[in-house]
Amino acid sequence: INLFAGRVSRERLLLEARLELCRFRLRKPVGGFEEGTSFRMLTIHWLCLSDPDRTFTAAHPRLPGQQRPGLGLLPQSLALLKDLGRELSVDGVLDVPDHFHTALFYSRAFRFLEPECEGRLHAIARDLRGIPLALASEAIETGCLVDANRMEPLPWEPAEQVMPYRGALRKHLLSPEYRRLRDLAFTALRVSVDWDRYRSKIAERGAVGKYP
Image (cartoon, rainbow, N blue to C red; front, side):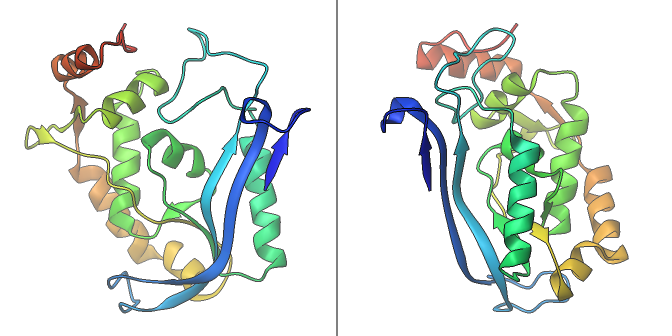
């Protein structure tokens, strides 16, 4: 699906979406599900909303992966996906966010299939609170996030994030055991940003970066 503001060109793109109705199969056991368990999913391969008439500013800087500023329609987009999923009678809507900020935005309605990944997301958000989102996400994207307990780099690992609708999948994501494992991961992880490494990485790119 492509929507444009006026003429059909990449410069006037408002919405670009690639969605697929498919069977999603687990690649490993998760919760009470065995490897190979399948679910009927509406899968988001790509979803981009952009404003061709705005530019990035100091107050609203570019997020990793962004070509143009967004439209500010995330709540409406999530509501649309929710309605579409219900119409199609799927078990859930599936996305694999490749950036921290994307996962954080989607976490308003989505949960990671694995509770440990959910706990990790919220632990990162907790420990980076107070750092502007664009800066935090860029630091993670450049490999500068550190496990503060081990003092080792902590790379962002994309994983399945789901908006559940029905059946065993919804039961899993709302279960006490899921919450227990999520909370254990949340409590165990502490992170920080290696700002020296960040400045070095940005310098290698020949860019200024977002470091204040």
